[in-house]
Amino acid sequence: MDLALFQPEIAGNVGTTLRTAACLGVAVHIIEPCGFPFSDAALKRAGMDYATRANSRRHADWAAFRSWSAAEGKRLVLLTTAGATPLPAFDFQPGDTLLLGSESAGAPPHVHDAAAARVAIPMRPGFRSLNVAVAAGIALAEALRQTKGFPA
Image (cartoon, rainbow, N blue to C red; front, side, top):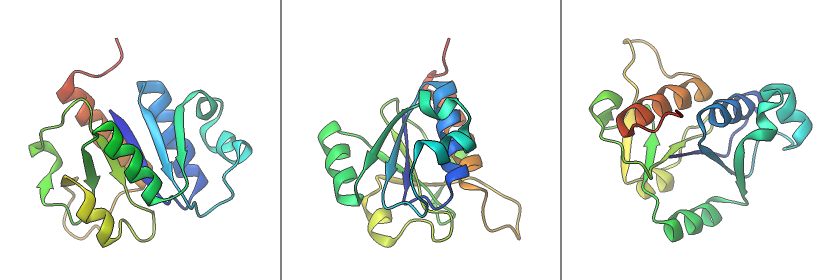
């Protein structure tokens, strides 16, 4: 199971996601450009010492990430407020990559088109979206539960 962040804009969200991934033993892919100066110092402030212990990989752009994911045979599962399948109804597979869009714009149409599936976290009416790091944690927990992928 992997997480991927498409052009993240807030260092704190990346740090939180890296911390979650380090604790749960999953990789994180950062698809640039980022909306902040990407540095170990910025991430360390947000993710404490966990961020440096995370298995992370930076991709120069969407094309580089797509090249990697295609070569690895990864199924991209996009978390989106415009998702067609509610999270509890979706069947995750162990090799999935959970992809999250940027904080302000989400994922553009070409990212939606590349996803094998689009999944939404159900919310009460009147609310637009969750924080991206919170959404990553919720979706990752459900994916790991379904695939029995939690650390022992």
